[in-house]
Length: 181
Image 1 (cartoon, rainbow, N blue to C red):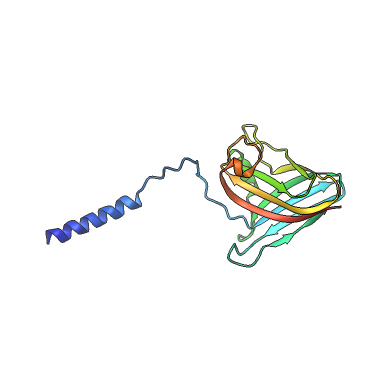
Image 2 (image 1 turned 90 degrees about the horizontal axis):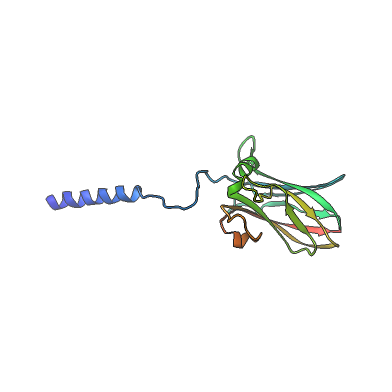
């Protein structure tokens, strides 16, 4: 009888110890991860506006995301701004301000296969490091290819501009098709 009580006590003690484990995460994850269903990148050059939209309202296991691609003018400079939203809530939650407020913990990266297309991040966090919500995009000669936007959480700052070298975790990664004419 005493053996059964001892085994039961050890079982309860092991469950208690397991459920109270200490989180030794080195990152300051004091925020709950947000659901990002919609990424909108708006490019403006006078009267020439291009809006790229990636939207996935039912998540990775559901339907393919709806993607609005774009066409840019060759040898032109655009002002760009990113907007992140969670449209599963009503009204839709704008997550962009939270990313900006936590700018020291976030950074956007832009990758393209289009020759001559460059993106310069124009906004900075409290430490003077780039965030990438606000940008300047400059096109070169005509061409077409992919354009990928990546939001990293807890990247190394400052970094070389490579999302892989910056590390951290990926909050969102979306790819568009772009044409430069």
